[in-house]
Amino acid sequence: MSLTEQLQEIFGSRFKEQEPMAKHTNFRIGGPATWFVEVRTIEELQHAITAARDAGVGFFVFGGGSNMLVSDQGYDGLMIKIGMRSYEIQGNRVRAEAGVLSSALARATANRGLKGLEWAISLPGTIGGAVRGNAGCHGGEVKDNLVQVEVLRGGKIVELTNEELGFAYRESAIKHSDDIVLAATFELQETEADELKSQLDHYLMERKRSQPFDAGSAGCMFKNYDIKDDEELQRISEKVDLPLEMSKSRRLSAGWLIDQLDLKGKQIGGAKISEVHGNFLVNPGEATADHVVQLIAFVKTRARDEYGILLEEEVKLVGF
Image (tube, rainbow, N blue to C red; front, side):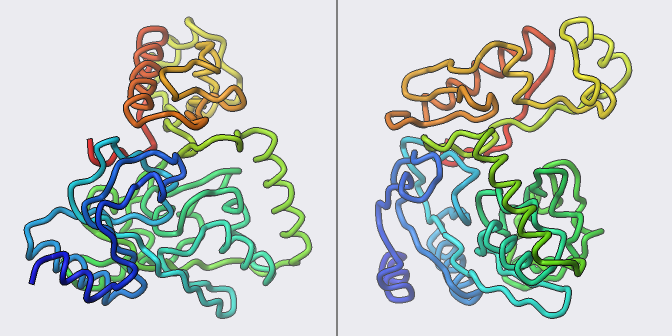
């Protein structure tokens, strides 16, 4: 039985061939995946991976499509979308499957008077991606309240503790392995639900004020930059006036850096640097992946030439 026939048999209408990835990414960019499935159980995920491996076909697993840029040529393999979206709250613990939207979990836990995930209300994407990249905003990060993660490793389910995940700024051990996040468990703190709901409203208003909503994007394109030592701090300070907070924390906001380079509004082809937030590269409607990649390279070159800073993408490039 061919791979197409196997996937058709297992997934029915959730299997597609030559599926445009622009339909599945927040950038609204991306050519066709040769094969595409949405999995709703761990068993379906295992079946999809086994079928791809037996056929000698590559595969890529993703969740919300919020933090990825797929090439214009698409992906010559099997795209697997995680559609496992259940969560369960018991006491002050919540276990969420990888496909649960981070913002939905933030809302659900706040409504139950559980504090610790309210920062995620303005986070695009799913819990699986958030864990993998130790996502964070508004002063919170995934690692702060995470207790345990379940991953698929070599076809088997493995449980990992917070300490085993090697969390750092936008980093985890999962990023450097073939592990696939299946679910995550968080331990939260009980408090007044009304207080948390007010906090959610505040974060959402802040997001609307400071981020673009009128175009496709993958959120923040670059990681903030960590200054390595006193010598580098001195060198950068001689080139640009650093805000006191950044100087003290030794972490430079990528959006602020791009603003200092006077690049807001810069456009290559259909891709543009947002005029609202410098770390958002946006697709107003006609951008291609090639345009975005060229714009990424332009920003990185300017940051290197002007300040000696090597910016690193936060967004995953797929099919390049």
